[in-house]
Length: 83
Image (cartoon, rainbow, N blue to C red; front, side, top):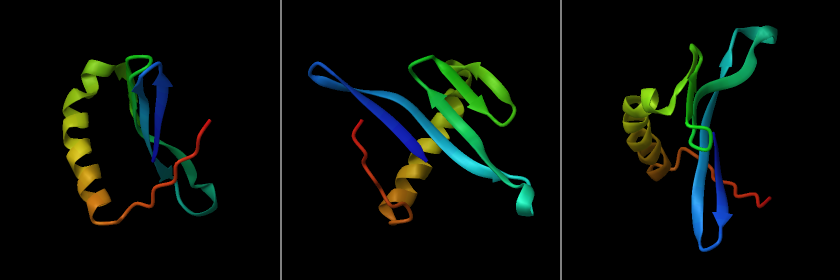
């Protein structure tokens, strides 16, 4: 999971949220984007292709509370890296 925030003047802007997964098996498995909400470019991407961001609205509304639930349970370790 990668979330990018950018600071602009007196506020923060959410640029993108990308969730990764492995595709393939064994030595042939590759890390790839599973879901990508790119708010900077108004694009939504899944393993099935690129779409306008509005096409990902239902997915985002399902994804966000699931992510927050897992975070509250301590499933994720958060690492902040400044640019």
